[in-house]
Image 1 (cartoon, rainbow, N blue to C red):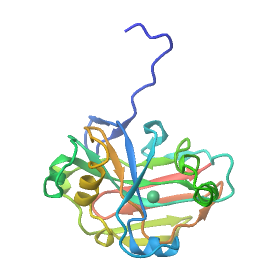
Image 2 (image 1 turned 135 degrees about the vertical axis):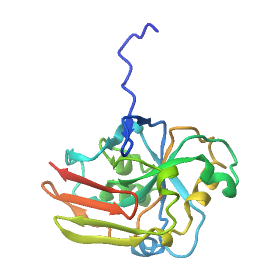
Image 3 (image 1 turned 180 degrees about the vertical axis):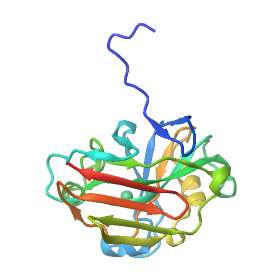
Length: 227
Ligand code: MN
């Protein structure tokens, strides 16, 4: 292929205990998927899931040092179970959805909450609040054929050693199979797609110099530092 400019390098995630890597295609995120977080954001009840996207090159595979982003004074963390698909499809039935899953990882949906709040207020898109550079640190993938499909497990996040989020995967409003099924009714999913499945309560503001550590039982841990 005779490219007129160099093509972007593929974005790949490490796979735990493997030399092979997972190539990322699209990155979807579920909004407000834990009742405790819905309440802290001012919502209520079991609404149908809704989705937004981050560009794949916003992922930060393995975490590490992340530049504090511009145009915000309210950067917040959202620790989330991330689902990685090995196959896709449209209109996937929930009972077949887990067959599409390659594995799971811990991720952080970094959010410029002030920009997201302005967008909400004005009915504008969320991208500048959610889809900025380095907004998606994500840890190594753990294959489902090794760890199964985590239906329970503690999901936690600490800032400078202080516990800020302490939830339970089993408290997701829409479980992984339901999320995959619902999302596939809007878009055709494919191998390489990642889905951030929402965050429990306790989101909080972080600053330059903060060290963030998080984890999910059975799905590993992830650490980042804001520089
Ligand atoms: Mn989120």
